[in-house]
Image 1 (tube, one colour):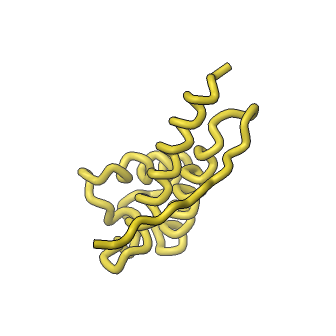
Image 2 (spheres, one colour; image 1 turned 90 degrees about the horizontal axis):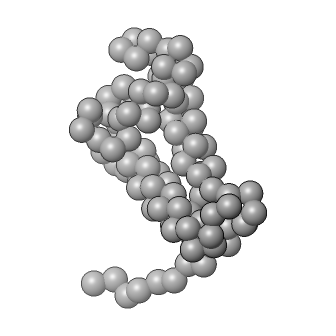
Length: 99
């Protein structure tokens, strides 16, 4: 069984990944379709793997299928926030003054 500290670290990394993915997918310059994610993006491999699991044609997928892949990416990232069944994630948000 993982220690509380290990679970906390995994959860913090998962939250950061979820925020980064959300920012990437919902920003003004986000790709319209998932297959437009650049290969050097940290999210490319995940998108491609999910597309393959769904047996989609990466190069010719529909916009609806692309949206399904993006939703699955977000769902996987969200699910990773609670990496251990022995602990529930409790999120506390703090703020710092913008520069």
